[in-house]
Image (cartoon, rainbow, N blue to C red; front, side):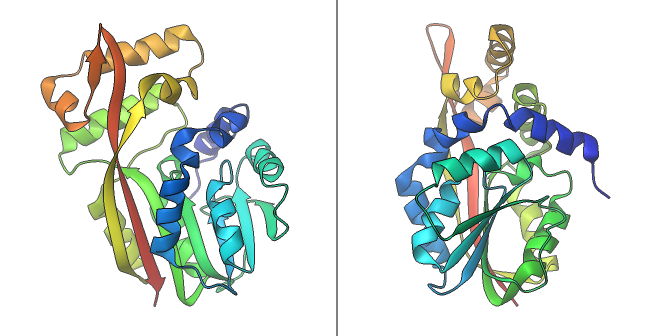
Length: 257
């Protein structure tokens, strides 16, 4: 069952902020994108699908490495901005699509990717089933998303923070949860990587801030957390202001059995 209210919030939240995601250093980092392509090793003559393409960064990284890329996103304005951003690439097409109900036939792609988006999906297990369904046998699925620690209190705190910052946030899952969903969908894990990434508070917050009061509320919430939260998420405070924090990001490449 879908969650139209949540998905409507995603469209409303990201449409006006599309350009900010195109220029986001977190999403556009060429070194990180290169590493992801090295993990995936896409088939040169294959067709790839990038789910929830956002600013189109992964689609752009895929384009020189495969025959064709389908960039999909549920937010039309985001997809239109990605198309403008990738205007010089002639092997990318754009499709408005819900990640949990993909409008593609079974076994349509040699590669499927989804980066830093799944925490917005109401039913991530359904998204994984859909990604596996549209993959051809032997095809590869690259998933990248923020994850939470196994400790329930710290996990809940991080998700509370993300929801306070962005009301279209649903939930960051743990690595253990993702592994269950992937395995149950007929995907076998080939390689994985967990990294800690530094989020500079001002640009991270400004991408989603409704106004100065919203940004101040989130900053105060972070400062008021206890030592265990600050240590786990690398919170750095200077002169009474939150400078940065650290999120955990998991990337995994799976193969369709």
